Structures are given as C-alpha cells and as structure tokens.
Image 1 (cartoon, rainbow, N blue to C red):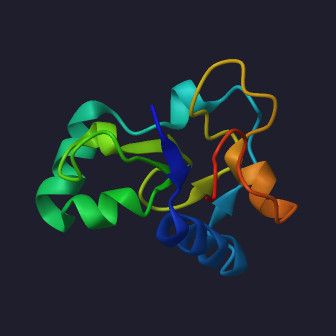
Image 2 (image 1 turned 45 degrees about the vertical axis):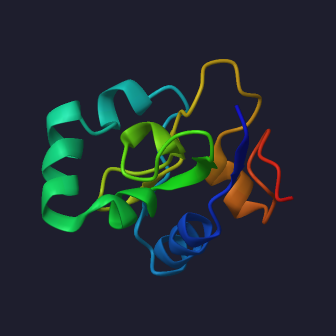
Length: 111
C-alpha cells in the first residue's frame, strides 16, 4: 500500500484549526466521535468524494479515487477536526496532534 500525504486535506485541517473548528478531546474518544458509515455515505452523496477526502490526511494511491478506501487517516466528523482522530490502531501520534506541531502525520510519505 502506498499512502501519501493528502495535501488538500492537510491544508483543510490547518484551516479548521486556525478557525477554531476543532475539538481537543480525549485521545481514545474516536470510536464515539467518528462518523458512521451511513453519515459518510450521506456526506459523499451530498458533497462528493473530493470533499470527503478533505477530511483525511492520507491518500492510498493504489485504490480508485471514487472509493472510501482511497482516503486514509480521518481526522474529523464533517464539522470539526478532532484531536482523537484515529486512523489506525497503534499509531504513536494522532494526525491532529501532528498538525498542532506542524509535522507530517505519522507514516505518511510526502514523496
């Protein structure tokens, strides 16, 4: 799997944080805050896959662009960025924490 930084999603996340549209929640709260599959599908129907991708920090370039699997490292609920965004179990740092420190999210190549 080749996952690269979603620059558009990264810039969108920074804009949400700059605008105060973020939740500084507990690290393990993602299971409670993540959008349901039904909410994701409704968002895609209304806004398209491009807008869906804005809520993800990674792109899996081995999967078609018009699929959910193309986007990885979710960080928000379609309204606000969440500190607890949990792309994968066992990651040492969360993507939104990386944004706060202006770092590239964990295990994402920018090349």
